[in-house]
Image (cartoon, rainbow over all chains, first blue to last red):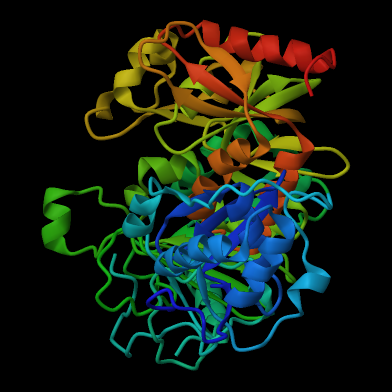
Length: 164
Length: 389
């Protein structure tokens, strides 16, 4: 997990897959953290930032700010002052994590959630709307997923059944 | 160590509570064990009982080793029953091992897990398997809760067209499982056929209907059950299936409906159809709509809209308002993902495609029940006329 919200070291950030799933619809994003039961909606600049993070390989914070500066009508230092705490929030919610591989350059491949309009947009600081009403389901019905080693076997016992 | 699963589960359950698993024996031994257990159960009784159903256009055969197991697990599918015909696409073997002469199938070592609803999932390229804990069966627990939920095991061998659903003791199948059984098996089987199970209710007419979505307590059941006896037909209150191609379509899975007992008074006509009237102090009220009101049930219809249900305190008459596609998706997706354990990116992508294919609305529920079907019918009238898009 990224700590401290300092992404100036060139760390590449990406979506915490497969624990986190997400979809974009009409320029808005829904993000679900399967581990915690929390889910989120991201709109406007938050959706644009998510769109850059979810690219294959992820994105560096510096490149993300540069890309936003080309998209929004706001100076880079203002964007940076807002975006870095937002990234820290995403990391605290375990929605993003450092990635090992470098992604494609942002400027050439960015796909904006708001579409392909070339005009610069008014910048509204990003926010993360969080919902926790599903957390009880995770607590009540925890899921244990078996890894590649297979179905767990209980030790041999006489008449070993399923505790009926 | 956390490792990726084999290919079978691009849309697998998530990793909410991983633990390390010590065995490397895989699922092959599981298949042998369940086949042997079912055969022993069939031999111990009077043979097997078969029934066939048409589920979302696919032929399903239930084959039970005990008549009472068939009775409890097939009741909710009766509206989908069809005459035995061509070879079924899937045969699900049903049995229990309450008799000590019948060996139980292999089950996982659940360690110190205590949550009764805990779900253990495994897969290999051939099999999917899910084990739900139920309770320990400890005599001290049963002494104070004699009908404690039974453990259950679901295994699908899709390539062979075979599946197995075992319970330790069919007498302890909980009411909610009896009302909506085989959810995981149906989900695994149908999803590879383009049929997606959702945590949603559905009502409509032959020419089109709506999904009613939202988390538990949002009013889905109240809204869907309120339509009984109206021009709308009931396809389910909690779990239904959809297909997206060639056009969005709802498929009924279960003929049951469940309602909080204190809500039955709002729909008093349900009292005549309660399946568990004597147990409402400890259970939700259950009705089998197709038994009591067979003309009110539909096996499916075209899907025209998603309604995100919510109860509005102080409101009298139900009303329908505009909603964004994200609102529709947000009301549908998280509860489906967590309820169904279909916890994967692919499930969410399919629901996004659904939300893009049909418009979303908010269904606000007030105290006047007859106004709910009127509001839904009014919306369908407008959608049929192309006035809303």
